Amino acid sequence: MKYLDEFRDGAIARALADEIRQIVTKPWVVMEVCGGQTHSILRNGVDQLLPEGVELVHGPGCPVCVTPLEVIDRALAIAQKPGVIFCSFGDMLRVPGSSTDLFRVKAEGADVRIVYSPLDALTLARRDRDRQVVFFGIGFETTAPANAMAVKLASDEGLDNFSMLVSHVLVPPAIEAICRSKGNRVQGFLAAGHVCTVMGTRQYPAIAERYGVPIVVTGFEPIDLLEGIRRALVQLERGEARVENAYARVVSEEGNPAARAVLDEVFEVTDQSWRGIGRIPQSGWRLAPSYRGFDAAERFDVGAIRTVESPECRSGEVLQGLITPPECAAFGTVCTPRTPLGATMVSSEGACAAYFLNGRRKRGTNGVAAHA
Amino acid sequence: MCLAVPGRIEQISEAQGTRMGRVNFGGIVKEVCLAFVPEAQVGDYTIVHVGFALSTIDEAEARQTLETFRALGVLEEELSGDVEGGE
Image 1 (cartoon, helix red, strand yellow):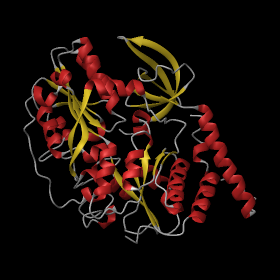
Image 2 (tube, chains in turn purple, yellow):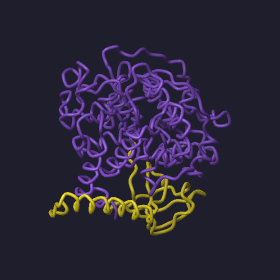
Image 3 (tube, chains in turn purple, yellow):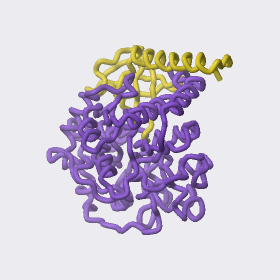
Image 4 (cartoon, chains in turn red, yellow):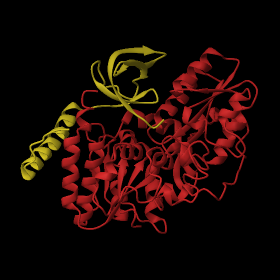
C-alpha cells in the first residue's frame, strides 16, 4: 500500500505528540472503541507518547469478546450435529462456551472449518448439497454487510443447505450505554474507522450532542490514532462536543450506500446481549422476517439455550472502560492467553490479550494509567 | 477478524451475478467481492474486510492528510530547531 509507510512516519508521530503536549492542560479520558485500534495503540506505543494525565481506555469493539456465551453454546450444539459443516472466522474457535470450545469439538470429530470469508462457506454449500453448511455470523457493522450478502446470495440461489447463526452488534447504542453507565469516566471517543466506512459519520452527531462528548472517526495507523486523539483533546480543552472525521481518505458522511442497502434488506435491528455487559436495547441485528428461513438457531432448534456467566472474570468492566486489564486480580495470574478466563483474553483483538502480549502486565506501566 | 486491509484492484469480473475482483495485498492476491464498491476501477486502492471491499481510498484525501501532517512536522522542526529530521 503506497501510503502505508507514510502513515507510520515516526517524525510525524513525534510532531503530533508534541502538539498534543502543548494542548493539554488537565487530565482527560478518551476511549478508543475498536479492538483493532487498541492493538495498534499498544503495539506502536501510541499511549506512551501521550502526556501524563491523558488516559486511553479500551472500548467494547471486539466482536469475539462481546458475543454472548449462550450464542457460543448454540454454535457448539449445532457444530456437533451430524451432517453439519460449521464454518467460522478463526478467532471464535478458542472462545470457551459453558463446557467446551469449537477447537475441542473439532478435535473430537465435528466438521468445524475456519474460513476467511462468509463467501467461503457459500462455496462449501454449493459444492456439497447433501450437507448443511452453517456460518457463524458475528461482528460489528464492518462485518455485517459481508454476512448479509452471503445470506442474500444463498436466498437468490435457493441454497437450502446454507444457514447462519447470527449475533451482530452495533456500535452507536454501545457508546450511548457507556455514556449512560454509572461510573462512566469516558469524556471523548475515537470512533472505529471501518465501522464508519459502512455506516458513515452521520450516526454520531446526535450522540455527541446528547452526551456532550467529542467523537472523532479515527483510522488505525499510529499517526491516524495520534491525530484522532489530538482532535478529541482540542475539543475537550475548548469545551466542544462535535463529530470530526480524521479518516476522510476512507470514511464519508453517508458511509457505503450499497452495503447499507443489503443490510437493510437482510437484517433488522433488535435488542442484543453483549458478553460481559448485558442487554443493550436496539444494539444488534438479526435476520429480517423474509430471511428468517436462513436462521441456523431456528433450523437446528437451539434458540432456547441459556447460560450464566462465571462471576470471576471482570471483562465486562474492561469492555466498558471502567477498569484497565491489570486491575483485575486474575489478569496475568490465573488468566492468560493460554488459560483465558474471559473473552477479552481469548480474542486476539481483546484488550486483556493486547495488554498481556505487549508486556503491560502492571497497572500504570505506561505511566499514564495510574490516576483513575 | 476485524482487520480491514488495503489492497490494489488488479482485475474485475463477474461470478454468479456478483461483481468480483482480484485484489493485490502487497504480493498476496485474493478473490474479493466488489459488490459494495460499484465505482471501483482496476488500479484503485480498496479497503477489504472478510473478502468484501468496503471502500475505495480517496487518494486526494490521503495526500491532503499527509500534507497537513508534514506541515505540522516542518512547523515543529522549525520551532524546536531540531535538524535531525526523520527516524
